[in-house]
Length: 157
Length: 399
Image 1: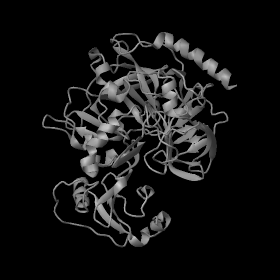
Image 2: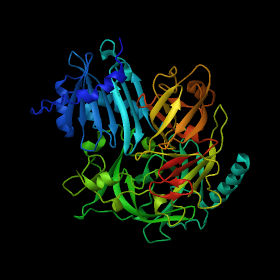
Image 3: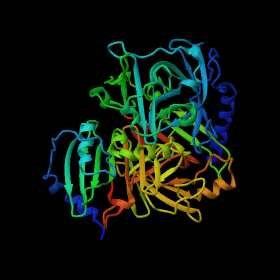
Image 4: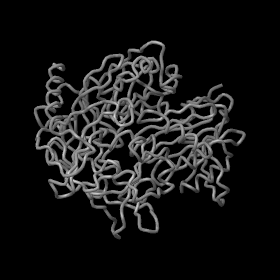
């Protein structure tokens, strides 16, 4: 089964009522992508964002609104693992924070390519895509092997 | 008609090239006295062998001087950003460009974040001359300046560093995009990480910068021809070419050589996005960007390359395609384009650097970025926000 994105989006207005503002102290600096749900809170505190949580049966989306206006969405599986992150807005997000242990792999792969402009990196265990230009960025990263049953990469945006 | 135009432009390019060439050399040379609004473009291997980068030369002078100048070549033309950025290593020390400071007298240093990495360096002032146009006392970013070696973590957190010529792929970047400033009101009204920093001896901290002190779109500062620019690139064969030539023409509808003609105007949203309709899909994150080497389209549309162009699209046979670009007002313009097998192209001609048929997956399923392949054989107009043109007020793209 594939998540119906159109239906999921239409549920946003209703889901927006389920807003959780977590206020606990920062935990250890865990990786976000590939990390546990607790790492979402670490990210939130690190980037000074507000948080709202949108849930479906297959996964939950933790949406962080950063001070610059860039929105970071972290996709958490029912098992509590962050299997994807997506961003959109006027500034690049703190990729070191939200990619966690995957950041160095991304930087190494990004530096090796012979092109300017958007980045599309696909490796076993890691997909990173980054595009846009100053004042308008969009991108995402995910672990293909960690997508919950029935969820496609198209959902991560 | 197009052939005649191209031949005419080539003539201008050759004439300009004769007096405006050189580059990376020492200071003290007299800037070219030409008064046209046209600067020749070359697509070639450049300093780092990256395909599809459009290069020009730019003359920079110490503010107020007409003799302490340097002409620098291999400057990439970018319709996706705003502002002049130069690599520290290609600047003649005798230029002695003045460091810009904040309200407390501390050096102002900028982090510019791109989709593919970041560049860090101080903001200085320069007089820029290009094709007879001038932008005086303009803020310029000097990338990789050894005087500011410590990069804040919230700058370097966006990806790979691009702080020298080889990682930047050019000697500098001329951002002539849709917007007047590189950051704009957001940096004037709040303190955002990853843009401007105040750098006293104790270390750099993010800071607000008034609009007038940010890096400016140089075209917007010209006294004439200041409402936008046109990029005209020659066509290249399906198999690519070692190089390509063209022109960067300043102004839209301001002179006999920059009228819109039959070009369709596509207004953008405030951030520079339009919509592209392709293959039954609506790509809502779309833009035209001379600073991108490829077409970046969606996700999983074609098989991916496995050899030299690993990760890019490699259809078994060349795909001849058509898309419709749509502005925010609903105006549309159709574009034919092709996607070839990049691995085969590179293997057949390893010395080629100009291709109109290279594409890659992009940053999002909604992304359609029209990079330099789109520009070959077209006249592409970029109108600056708030500026009046015969085709309406910017920001818009037209072709």
